[in-house]
Length: 397
Ligand code: PMT
Image (cartoon, rainbow, N blue to C red; front, side):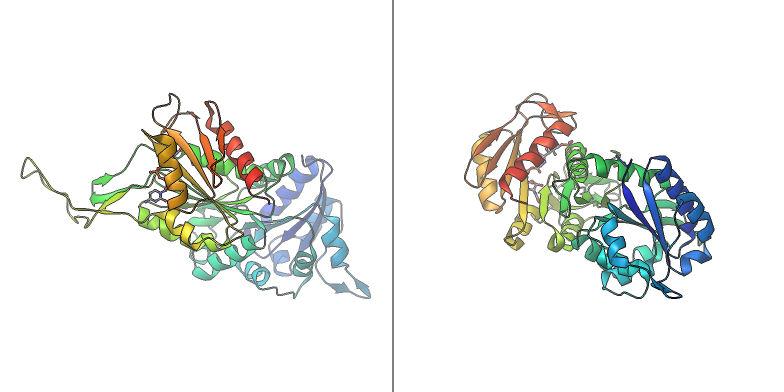
């Protein structure tokens, strides 16, 4: 609950700064106490007077003014959460590199509370490698990300980089304060959905995964306070705001995304139904039906879980899934060992209400000591709770 919470709102130089007035308004309405800190360039986009009137507090900007010094340490310790919205590319880069040339950055570096950022910038800047690295750095510091939206941008172009709407930011904060937060400061990587391996421009090899199970896990981890990166194969399932979503198509793309994120990850959960085979070459043109039979040469896709299992260090926890149709326990335990996972989550297509596309699932979890945790058929959201509870039992955060 936001009511009674002390919130520092940091505003930086971006056209989205005009939305900060609504953020303050909504926070005050929800019963929070708000102190606003602005960078100098933020005041080109919104007047400090507007924000001091709405927040009922003086707006701070300078480290020292006349003979007074703004106590950034006290401010950093006062807050229950520090929200930077909008976060410009420039301030992001400074935060990622420990630069401290204004009051906002000094408070950030002194903050003992959770920090959450809502970036805003043009698409080209957002997708630039340096921005990606800076965001990854912030996440590795345990800061949280409210992902950007897709839409109209200040440049007149349309694309990624638009700041989350004030209502979405408030909803993120509500959820953050409501949950138990055992995963606060942890970064969780989750794969979900199918992969599609292209045969030609109109056909692919895929499977029936919808991503429901992985998305439920991503929601659960986010609700427990984790910064979540969801690597998602092709699916029409909706994904809530508040997590980083990397959309991929093929197993190779899924592996590449995971390899980028894994070094900064504390817990990785591989829930995707990765296609096991891919055509050796994808035809550039639609393959014609010239003969009754056709042969397509297939090759194995990279095994993402196994690759991460080989890279895992002592502080990282790796969870795999096993989707089986026979000799379930034996096959699941083989996958646990072969892929160097810490837990394996078995679901069997022989169980009613388990597997692809359903709203429910039925799982048994095995750890490296071959301890068995059995669960009844439940909604995938409740299954996700059981999985996270088991992770917390085995992995001492
Ligand atoms: O998405 P839904 O419709 O909600 O369905 C959920 C689900 C049935 C897909 C999910 O619960 C599930 O079982 N996911 C794993 C499916 C699968 O591919 O299982 P597997 O036994 O073939 O693979 C074992 C593990 O290796 C899995 O963690 C898988 O992500 C991983 N793997 C497999 C192949 C590959 N090339 N790379 C991998 O990382």
